[in-house]
Amino acid sequence: MDRQDTARHAPDREAGLEKLRSLIEGMHVAMLTTQGEDGRLFSRPLGTQGVERDGDLWFVTGFDSEKVREIEANPQVNVAYASKDANTYVSISGIASVTRDRATIEAHWTPAMSMFFPQGKDDPNLCMLRIEAQSAEYWDGPGSAAGKALYFLLTAVTSNPGNLGENARINLQ
Image (cartoon, rainbow, N blue to C red; front, side):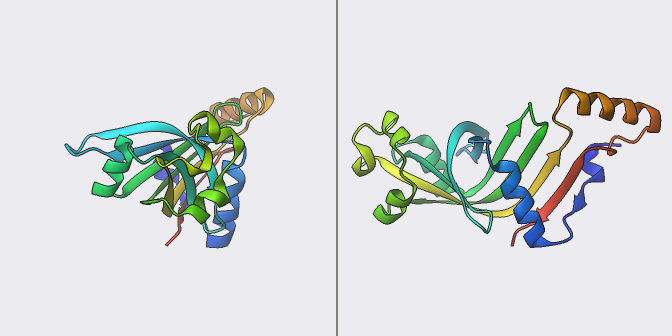
């Protein structure tokens, strides 16, 4: 049976959001997927600048980038996080918007961003992407080598791939 078929819905939205935030914490780079004009999907890495209490995500990018044009044409996006070491994977589907609001940029600005925006937070090309999270799914398995070995052993003995891993879908609307 495919693991996706065994996904369960998180019983409580708030508990699901808390779990989602805790899984994303420490995974600073995400893959943002947008849809191009011709319908093809394009993914690229972006550093996460913030995760709101409601699951919404913030990223910084250049206003002149292709992803901004793709978002303006079709704001439905997906954001994926992966941590091989922790054996944790998160996929968030949502609606993206682009803002050049100075207060929003100020609130999310970090000195490390100067590497990409040498003119600093006043760079005219600097903008923020907000992903209004609509739904999410996560897979959280054993992270240590011993935990993975135990997982594989129990899976082989019981023929049940869900023994030590957790998979849930969260409706964020």
